Image 1 (cartoon, helix red, strand yellow):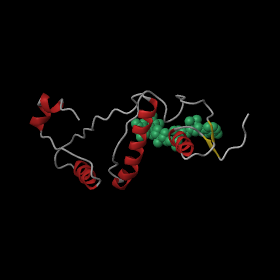
Image 2 (cartoon, protein in one colour; image 1 turned 60 degrees about the vertical axis):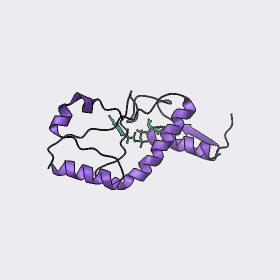
Image 3 (tube, rainbow, N blue to C red; image 1 turned 180 degrees about the horizontal axis):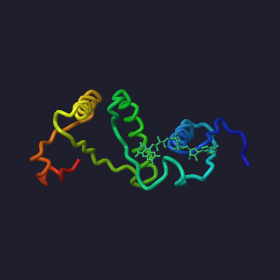
Image 4 (tube, rainbow, N blue to C red; image 1 turned 90 degrees about the vertical axis):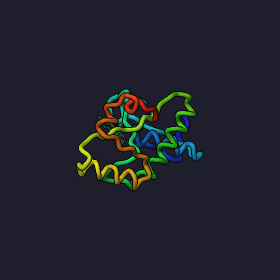
Length: 133
Ligand SMILES: Cc1cc2nc3c(=O)[nH]c(=O)nc-3n(C[C@H](O)[C@H](O)[C@H](O)COP(=O)(O)OP(=O)(O)OC[C@H]3O[C@@H](n4cnc5c(N)ncnc54)[C@H](O)[C@@H]3O)c2cc1C
């Protein structure tokens, strides 16, 4: 067995598996260790689905980093020929003057994330609800 590696990554969850992949892409000789096996369902990252948010209200400055990750998810999807990322937009509901809603919209606009404001009538309109993203 080959035992001469440039980098060993311990824990192949969200961070570790991506780090391992990117290090390998950079041409490094890497090895990963995962206590429960690759792709296990016993950690925070396991399970059928996970949400991918392009912005966090408290940290709009994360969006450029998240967009790098998004490009990598697309690259992984292309490489594996398996659809792993389904982008459908997000819906945040609340009274128009709710400070959290205002903060969300301000943060989204500041981060360059496209937003659309729908009133009650438009929300009830099925053509608006079924709009493709
Ligand atoms: C129920 C739940 C739902 C979530 N939903 C979302 C979501 O929808 N969207 C989102 O962005 N985030 C979500 N998160 C958060 C996200 O899963 C975590 O932020 C992310 O997984 C953290 O990545 P990590 O690599 O630090 O840890 P993990 O993904 O947990 O990976 C750590 C890995 O290290 C392994 N490990 C630990 N110790 C050792 C050891 N000694 N030897 C070998 N292996 C070891 C563990 O088994 C595990 O696989 C969710 C979290 C939970 C708990």
